[in-house]
Amino acid sequence: MTSQNVGGVVSDICNVGYYGDDCDKTCPSNCENAGCMQANGTCIGNCKEGFYGSMCDLKCSSRIKNCIHCEVTDGKCLICENGLFGEDCRFTCPEQCETCESKDVCMTCKKGYFLLGNNCAKCLNNCKACRHYSECSECVQGRYGPTCGYTCPKQCLECKSADECTKCKVGYESTSRKCQCSHNCYREGDLDSWCSVDGNCSKGCIDGKTGVHCQTDCDDEKRCLRCQQFSKSCEQCVIGYYGKEHFCGKMCGNCLKESSGDIKCDIEDGNCPGACTLGFYNEQCKLQCAKNCDNTKGCEKITGKCVACKIGFFGKKCENSCSKNCFNGGCEQHDGYCNEGCIPGWYNNTCESTCNKGCKHQICDRMTAECSHGCENGYKGKYCEMDCLDGFFGSNCTKKCGYCLSSQPCDKKTGQCTEGCDKGYAGSECIIECLDGFHGSDCTKDCGYCLSSQPCDKKTGQCKEGCDKGYTGSECIIAHVPDVEEESTNLLFIIPVLIVTTVIVVIVIIVFCKYKNRRCSCMLYKNEHQTGSEQAQELNDRGIHDDERSDDNSDDDTLHSEEAKLHKADDDATESGREVDGRNFHRGGEVDGRNLRLGGEVDGRNLRRGGEVDNRK
Image 1 (cartoon, one colour):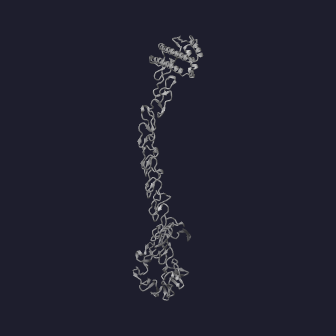
Image 2 (cartoon, rainbow, N blue to C red):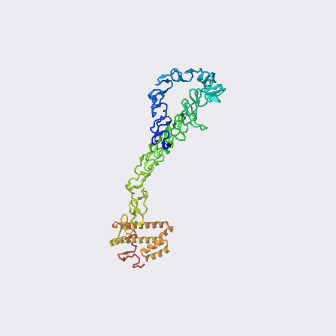
Image 3 (tube, rainbow, N blue to C red):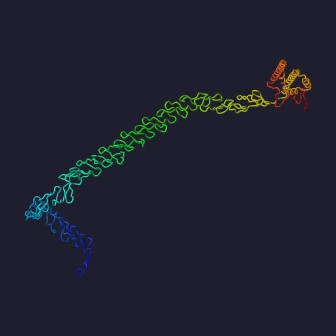
């Protein structure tokens, strides 16, 4: 908004394009130069072409069809569309006229004509546009000159002269104002032989181009390095692609890279010329080897058969699982046989059959199932399928049971007597005989008081030779105290024994002294003054076996005869003593824990046979 002083009065004027008291309203868009009255917004001057009215908001064509410009006030048509005339544009101009006032008056001419008077005259034949017959402003293609009387060079579509082409024919390129064969034509030999008169490339196209003029790329993705000129069939693809008829639109498979590192495949079918990358197969190397193939060896290119399987699988494509009982888990690829044998407890080719439980360590021959390491304790037989018979145990049942209680069978595996041992034996297998002094089952009982500490019977505990003094019973474990009557009875047995013993000693001495007169008298003298016990003691000390020094065989016979008689008498006396009260009495034996000696004490009285009384010798 600007201010203006008119006659001393200052007023505001709106900027162009606006009106109103505050100049906040926009003039109508079709007002020419965007001007309008500030008071009411009516257009100042003319409307834009094609509109009329005070606000220039009405179309001329809405009132008169084909009218392109009309009076602002009333809409009367001033200019009709080209080729039409009249107030309502209903009439057509002559054919050669661009615009006209009437059928007889042309205002402008169409191209190829020039205005001659009120009419339009045709230009010369080769003129495309002219101002007069002799002045062509534009020639038809291929012609040049003031009257278009000259022909352009063959490569030129349009030219200014024989040496200056302004537009080249298809297949030719402008180079230094001249048209030459396209640079996409295969260039070999003379320049003019590269392409024909019409610009077609005579010898084909350079790599990557196709078409008669070699102006078209072989493919949009530029994967086809070289293609045929007229069919677009690719003859060479970029590395890693193929597809002769598909513009190299397909990618090669997993072909093994060449030494250069390039991946190449057949351009027509994509087949790999060599091997596949490890892990792929088929002719195009697009299929993956089976998942259970050994990753380090892959599979055969054509069939996909695994060269080797991962441990635990078999089959052409390793689709089958080895038996879980194969040793180390592996098996033969073609048949699944466990090539390293079976784990303990299994046999046959595929380790699917179980060894008998009796095989030692559960190991058996892989083919026959025989227990190759023998049997476990308690079993026997080639296959260890039989239990041991009662009374035997151990591997192959070769051991006999010990002395188990009541002859019960022992454990067939351990040999142990589960119920204990028979009398006289001990140990888990009952094969250890009781030590001396012990008896009974498991040797848990001590022997009784056997005579002279001799061992008792290890089974029954009985003392075979009788009991020590003071004990009785079969096992000599019952303490025994004799009464007075029993002591008297013992004396009745002892006295005859003493008498017989004394007689024997005397007879022996007499016989011996027959040849030893000096000694004999001495001995006889002493014998008269010695008790029987003293005589026996002296003979014992001196050793009556001096008779061995005798040289007289007849005397020896006499001595032996006498000794035999004495021994018989002694035995008779002893036998009679044994029958008393059913008890065994021994000569010189012990009774009731007290030592009874020859010449011992009875009932508090000293009985003496040629001995000393009252502690006198």
